[in-house]
Image (tube, rainbow, N blue to C red):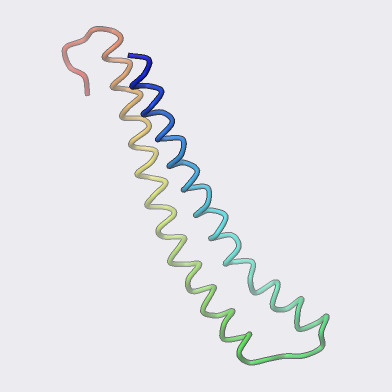
Length: 97
């Protein structure tokens, strides 16, 4: 029972890494307006293409936010389900889920 647990929990851990990457991307997308303002102040130049690009990236951040929340919920359910399955299996109960 050790080998399957090592395999499944390492897969779950790698998928949690994907969730962490989505969280980092979402935070980065939402910090883009701050970088835009900082760039405009330091360079003393306002450029429209950067402004509209910033608006687009913030919109993409909202899409990533929804995807991140959904993916985190799925990963929480998968991790909790597999852990409960293991507890029932170790206790020797006939009902495993």
